[in-house]
Amino acid sequence: MSQSSTERITAELERWIGQAVPGSKLPGSRALAEMFAAGPVTVQRAMHALAARGLIEARPGVGTFVRRRDTVRPANFGWQTGALGAPTATTAPIPDTQRETEPGAIELHSGYPCADLLPTALVRASAARAARSGHALTRAPAAGLPELQAWFAAELSGSGPAPHAARDAIIVPGTQGALGSVFRALVGRGKPLVIESPSYWGALLAAAQQGVTLVPIATTPTGPDPDELDRALRDSGARVFYAQPTFANPLGGSWHPDRARDILKVLRARGAFLVEDDWARDFPIDTAPERAPVPLARNDPDGRIVTLRSLTKSLSPAVRVGALIARGPARDRLLADRVADTMYVSPLLQATALEAVTSPAWRTHRSALPGRLRERRDLLLQSLAQHAPSVHVDAVPQGGLSVWARLPQGTDAGEVARRCAARGVALAAGDAWFPAEPAVPALRLTFCGTEPERFPEAAHVIEGALTTG
Ligand SMILES: Cc1ncc(COP(=O)(O)O)c(C=O)c1O
Image (cartoon, rainbow, N blue to C red; front, side, top):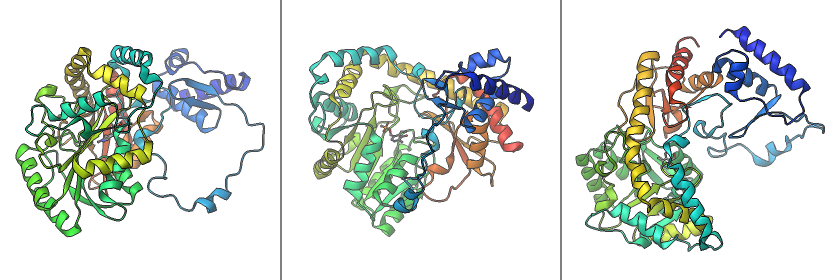
């Protein structure tokens, strides 16, 4: 669609907005596209232009509305500049992955699966049962509902030689906050933490928030070099290594078993913990869940491994429940920190999660996920190969929810992300996954959002943002 189509739609909508009652809802982007016989990207551009001029506002999940005009003098918050001082890493604007998008945008930025990938009937039925139970009206024990603790402990232990006890699993309201606890209680302000590069942006933010000093080591889809880890631990004196051995975000690979064994040997020799962020346990793509690499903590007789396990993305982003699993004094310190932070997790959510994961439908859901993720991953990869020849995918992700797409050397990934956003495609610049300067320019593209049929269109936009500016 040409520039003039965008301008025509913008002008017509502006006329309509001028006569509309403030707060009126605009038609949805599909309806607008039909109304103006225009493509979604053109409509999206017009909406952007109207939003930028303050004429409309998007309320995520609800719709787009005619903005209420301020009748009072606009507030002046200038005084806060002096009172607050400069922003820190964690008070800077929120990361790309957490941004809300304009209606009609293609969403490749968010790691939260859309409803098509969730067990919706199971979640609703479990929530209804939980609401009818006593858990709707009481508090929960600090470490969580014992039955849910037992479920997480049993899941982790499998038939391993050193089973975890229910008490080892501390229930958390999502594992993002649990990362803060780990870095606060097991590392401490100003102390070193070894971390893979690239690694999960949220872990980097949590580390920054706790003031720990990052010691990055390069990683690959099959894991970091154990000798590099040994050097980093030795030189820094760090006693904690945060890593994602299975289906890492962002590279999508898993540590080779020999490498995992060597890494554990290094950690044992240096008296260090491994924080195993097992976020993608439910997201194998090329294997069935029972054949996916087992968590390293399954073979951990002496409490060296602290595990994070989340249900946010596989059950429902609205039932944000996970577990922090640790043994010995580390477990006690982590529990004390969790209590200081949140006291306890809503038993209504815990009971919902428990109802769901102990139902036969949960197994069915988990078994169906790999095939459904494979279709989406492959469609995104094909779309990139066909329509975005300037991006390069080094390794097909074996699990997880995203593709790591490398850009030509010298590209400003942030600028590409901004251009794509202006053209109706939300995605994340890879820079946020690096603890230091980005080693390569890259985009992190998720394939778990709505409308996978628009992946080819998104790939086109990415190529355009790279080649035509
Ligand atoms: C690697 C990793 N760890 C932890 C989390 C936090 O997940 P939640 O707080 O929803 O449990 C995420 C979310 O994207 C993640 O990608």
